[in-house]
Amino acid sequence: MAPPAMLRIEADVARLRDVRRFVREVAPGLGADEAAVLDLVQAVDEWVTNVIVHGYRGAGGPIEVELERVGDEIVARVRDVAPAFDPATAPVFDPNLPLERRPAGKMGIHLIRELCDRFEHRVPAGGGNEIAMTRSARPAGTETGGNA
Amino acid sequence: MNTTVDRVAPDVAVVALDGELDASNYRELIETGQQLYADGARRLVLDLSRLTYMSSSGIVAFHSLALVFRGQQPPDPEAGWSAFHAVSSDTHEGARGEEVRLVAPTPAIDRVLDRTGLKRILPIYPDRESALVG
Image 1 (cartoon, one colour):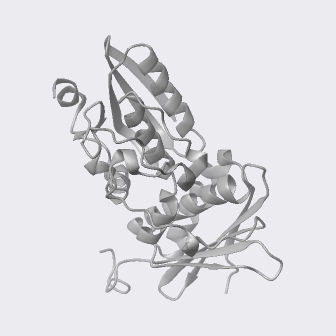
Image 2 (image 1 turned 120 degrees about the vertical axis):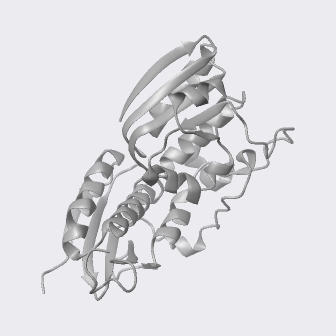
């Protein structure tokens, strides 16, 4: 079995376009349909943005993005060596709030939860963070059914 | 992302966004809007028909511009939740303002607007003409 496709970048918002390009190029080859590719591009972009801006606080650091097919799902993993942060501890964003009472940011985690089937965090042995964002490769029931 | 500003009237500006709006360029869009407001624009029409991708940073930019065009200070996006406090008891709270109008989002952009609740806050028009006369 081939190793997961991987992209390594230095934490910099200017590299976000490269991260999106990586997901757009690799995910279809893993069997992701168009909707899955769009969701994974956005989810990975949102999390990597979070790492760059809040994890490393703009100071830079390494980020790895990995894509892998596992069964009927695509798993996108993002690793960093920033201080440990479990997104499950982030306040829940309420999209129904009026303009004046909405937080300025923090919508990324809300979007990832909407876009992915699972969103899991762990602290690797050497520290930092590994996030796994899992999304079904295509709608249920179409796995053997052609181009639906 | 390229932005094209069309000052269609002394108090109305149309800004067309072409490309991808993300954390690398959303601040420039806020600054463009702040400059237009300082120059007398009181209505901002954002043409999204050529915007191909938008992350939640774009939502932060639209949110900030909506506040700017209501005469308020945009929040500091870096401050995140710590900046989240009940901003005065503005009489317009909860009202859907008409100062900033969105035009022709593609399905991919529309999805982000929907999932973040922005469609309930900013009006969306099918084309520039309807946004300008509405």
